[in-house]
Structures are given as C-alpha cells and as structure tokens.
Length: 525
Ligand SMILES: Nc1nc2c(c(=O)[nH]1)N[C@H]1C(S)=C(S)[C@@H](COP(=O)(O)O)O[C@H]1N2
Ligand SMILES: [Mo]
Image (cartoon, rainbow, N blue to C red):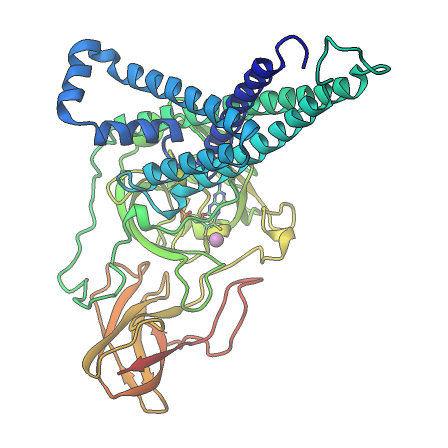
C-alpha cells in the first residue's frame, strides 16, 4: 500500500469491520422478519440495556434528554457498535482470528438480549446466530483479501522497483474493493428492505392493538365441568400465543382494516363488496370451534380450540344470491392462497360457518389472519379456514381448484374424528401408584360421544368426558389408572355422538387427513 501503508491498511481493516457489522445487522433483521418476531435486534439490545441500566443513570437520561432518551440510547448504541466493529476489523486484519472472536462474543451477547426479553422463545436467538455467522464470514473474507493486497504491495515503494511492481497489488486491491462494495450493497438492500417490511408490520400491529371491536351480541359461556382438573391435559381453550400456526406465508400479510374489502363474486346474482365497518355493523356472535390441520398426525398438536367472534357466512352469501348450479366457494387470501369449500357447508343453517374477526376475546392475531378469516366447523383448515381473507368466489368444483388441490390433497376434506393422549407422556416416566391418563378428542361438527382407553392388552375402559362446549369443539377425557412398575402401552379411541367409531386403519396425512388409534409407551417406575 502506497504512501503510509500501515495506517491505510488499518483504515481499510476498520472499514471491513463496519461492513461486517452491517452484514450482521442486515441478516439479523431479515431473520427476525422471517421468524415473525416483533422488534429487530437493535431494539432488543436497546431494550436489554434499558432493563439493566441502574436507575440513577436512567433518571439522568430522562431528565437530560426527555422524550429523546430512547433515540439517544439507540444512537449511543450505534456509535458503540461502530467503534466495536472497527476494532474487530483491525484485530482480524492484524491478529486473526481475534476480530472474528470479538464478533462472535457480540453475537452471543445479542442472542442473550434477544432470548431474555419478555415472551421470547428459543426461536428468538436465530437472528443473532444467522447475523453473527454471516458477519464473521464477511469479516474473514474481507481481511483475507486485505492481507493479500498488503502482501503484494512493494515493501518499500521509494526503493528501486522491479518491473511493474503494481500489477499484483492492483489485482489484490481490486479483489478487496469488489467484495467490500458487494457486501456493503447487499447489507444496505437487505437491511433497509427488512426494516421497511417490519416497519409496516409494526404499524399494523399498532392498528390492531388500538382496534376496539363492538361487544358481541351473544357470548359463549363455558359450562361447569367443561374443564377437567388433570395435570398435563390440554386446556379447553388454546391461548392465542400457543395456537398452532400453519400457512404458506413467508412474511405475514399486512392488512389494514381501513383498506380491507371483501368481494363476493363468481356465480352470483349480485356482486357484493363489504368494508370492515360494514362487516362489524352486522353484529358479532361468539362461536367455540376446534380448528384442525390436515397435516396433523395421529397424536399430533396441529389442533386447537378458540372462541371466535364473527358473522355467519350464509348471511353474506345470501346477499349475493348464488346461482343454483354452484357447489363451491373459493375463498382467497390477500397473498393468493385459496381454499375450496362446499357451498352447502357455508349456507347450512345448522353449521355456523363464520367470517371471524376475533379470537379468544381479541382481534385476530396477525399470524392468524388479521383482520378477517374464515372458520368452518368440521372441515380441515386448508379447505376452509382462509386467513387474511379478501374474496369469496362462488363457483363449481369442476371449474376451479384451490391451492392444495394440485399439490396432492383432496378438494374436499371433512375432519376425521380423532383422540389424543396428553398425559402421561412418552418421554417422562410415571411414578407407580394411582395416576390419571388424560387427553382430548374431537369429531367436529357432530361431537364426541365416548372415549375408550386400553392399557396393554386389557379391556377397553370408558373414560370420563368433560362437558362439551359445543359439538364443534373437542372434549377432554380422563381415566384413573393404578400404574404398576414396568412398561405399558396405552391406546385411545373415540366414538362420535352418532355412535361411529374412530377409524382404526392407519392413513397418512395426504390426501385427506391421518387416521388410526394413538398408542403410547409409558415407563412406570
Ligand atoms: N391465507 C392462508 N390461510 C390459510 C392457510 C394458508 O396457507 N394461507 N393455511 C390453512 C391451513 S392449512 C390451516 S390448518 C389453517 C391454520 O390456521 P391457524 O394458523 O390460525 O392455526 O389456516 C388455513 N388458512
Ligand atoms: Mo392445515
């Protein structure tokens, strides 16, 4: 490096550190977005600092900076991060791999800040892991090129030089600058893009939390005996935060209720268009429904129960007046997902298919279809439970196909009756003596009539059922058991209220849902 090689090299090394830090942040933001987390890593670390800073310092900050205290904190963090990044760059250049080690330590600290936030899960560590990994890769690659560039510089530029001394040095310089430029551009594009999208999501989250839905006209009352007191059994109502999520959306669609429109078109006399306020003006009722995914294996957990608030689909379809030869409604999500639902499942007076706006007393969570989704008792989610709904097209099964139909799943898919053992669990041994076997069973929209349990090769024993919330929800079941030491096989099966028995024959999830009786092996000690 000409002129003052040493200090120039160090400057480029510092710049490499900054670029690597930029790549770190950009990838962390993107990962945070893809794993559907609320705030980015920078805010998480900021929040962490706020939490650990001693109170006098906090009070000093508030009294000195007032409302700007958060901005000052974030700014200060950025400056500290920039200084740290420059140091990591110089370290990696002169004393590899110590710069990478420094970056790794920072990634671990950021990961710790992310997972220790309130309501954080194990997934929250991913942004730090992915960001740290990419940051280190970029730093190492940049410094490797920088060292090559330095090594090809003539040792003493003022001395008599061999023929064309600059050629290898020029190539080295070009290789370094090219990578520096590409990584900077990629970090800016990925980082700014992710911030933009997560900013939109933050604002829809804010709109959702400010949203006040009208009180429902009717509410579901949980009857006494609806919930059995068995440790380890699934709660009757699945909290929103624990509710399974299945969809094709890489990034959760951001729908502002103020812009939301529902169009009902296709084979109808009158095309209907509704706003969110039009929908709310029709008065809401509460419905308890157990949702089930076709991908749920026997004994699996892609099933959950919520109290939904919504409006019957049949009332809306009636406004549009479907033609007599229509037999299907293709519901569409803003992101293009579609589901094919038999028209009669939506118009049946005894079934209560709804457009839901609330889940367990709050507006639908963004992940569960905010602001409007469909819920149809008795049909698997992929043929009925369209989230982020924006269109109902009345049509025929021989004219239109839904998203999963050409992908190996049936066009029509009623939920198969099933039962599940929640406790005892396979992976936890049971202490010998009196204990309780318990779980849930569902047969929407008919309702469960009976659940039976078999221990090893014994007789089928009838379990006690909880009082059902509705025929569209699961029930809990329990059976007292005097557990003897050793290994035991527990089998469960259900009957619906019409007397049909849960299918014993095993079926895979494709094309229309799994079947078979769940068996678990329990170790009693
Ligand atoms: N827009 C949209 N809606 C969708 C899906 C989807 O991929 N996109 N998946 C469906 C499937 S397969 C299921 S099982 C349910 C799951 O609903 P949940 O994520 O609220 O539990 O949503 C349904 N609605
Ligand atoms: Mo599903």
